[in-house]
Figure 1: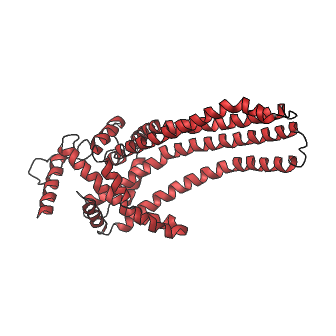
Figure 2: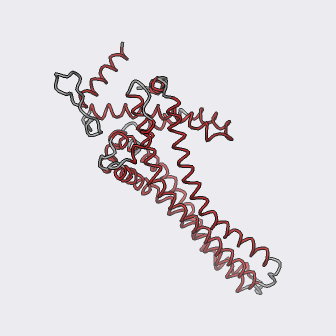
Figure 3: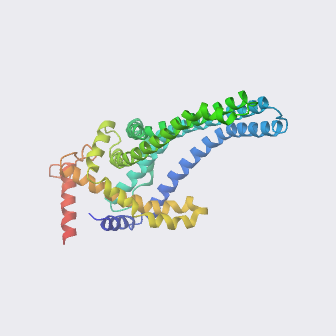
Length: 356
């Protein structure tokens, strides 16, 4: 199915009076996440502002009284101490941001995708409360586990970039502290520049080599990360269909379903860049306008996932029952038809309609 056909199907699904309901789902999701992140930012901002205030206070009180190398070193070391505390505070805030993502944002995302999946599968608009489907008893824990398992593997593939950044950060701090130490110990020496070159020459060379090496590693693993990102991208949609599916099964099924389609999904994302650039024109009110475009893109992604699901069912990778669908009783006096068979009949009818 071409991108044009996917987008046409998405538009048709939204024409049945469901566009503004989809917009409501998206903006509600964005609002809840914004509130959670704002509360977290405000909580940690007090600590960060306190550190920044202390830095400003030390600078104001000491810059005019620094009259010796020893006092200069003491002042600079205090600045380094404040910066380390600021970095630690930022690291702790990042950890809490991840916790919010795992316990709240991911669950809302699966509900959002459930709404768009069901909206394309029924005559009228899907129900708005589907957004909160993942929070129901018996579903929440499995959704959290499934999305966290996906995020864990994405973190594994991104960890070389994080490690490289941390190592470079530590090396820069160590270099700065060592430079100050050498400067203070040799302040009265007439050849302090030569001493620094002798002491730090190898250190600078090592830092340069590591910078080049880490740049190459970061580039390679950035490419690998995005390949894995698209390989795992169907996990949310699978969990939207069946929140109780095993977390390992969801990840493996996503890898199977996206095999040969990762590049197509990437190109599908790229096809919305023009709309994204137009969206920048509404920057002051983007919180309200972004969900307008997201409604269209999510509906298109729902069609893309449905295509992957069709093929997975056809190839025997999964059954509709495993994805949470139930048997359908078409006529009262007939045996119920399995969800997989019923779904395949709908696909065949749909393909026949398209060919005609």
